[in-house]
Length: 240
Image (spheres, rainbow, N blue to C red):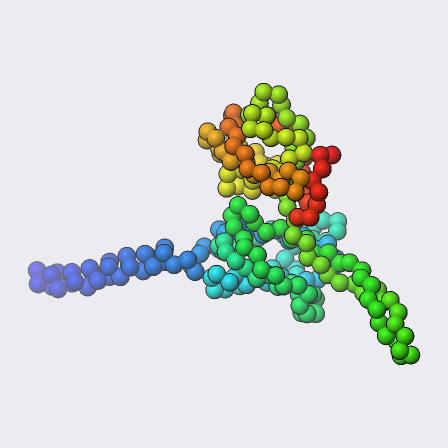
């Protein structure tokens, strides 16, 4: 019995070592990630037509498919869905119409702090076509366009003497992140400020410029009144 126990120990030891090595490989391998743990991506389909979106990761292997029928929130001008990518990195975004034809392709670096927010719209464009008589005439054609956009909370009022005023936060600024948390919604802003300890970094859009500020919340508040704001990268940020 004693010899039998001694002979089984090397096998057991090998199993333990192999398990530890496998666990280390899984933890260190950047290509393996838990689903729905990466940065969020929000898509708003304003085209009112079926589309499919594929995120092809250029820094890790694999694809993430956002099908045309995956609707999270039904809104008046189409549908909106928010999903999380498996990990951050550089993704090639392919958008195809209902017939499978490619209508858009571009590369984006997507991180936890700067997730991707795309609006897909249908627009009419005028093109010159030659008729059977060889004469050129304008013809209207409907095309899909993809517009990167940013969501945040626009400051409408700053309390005198509060943390926000001390940090030089101004009316009209759009808060897009607090620490590593984006603030696309008011609830996200509240959660980010409540989680802050001591001085935290706030990133705001001030007109066309991205500004970083340091603010010290008091009981999860900084002394501002805000409203939702969605804008495109080429928008001029006013203070209305």
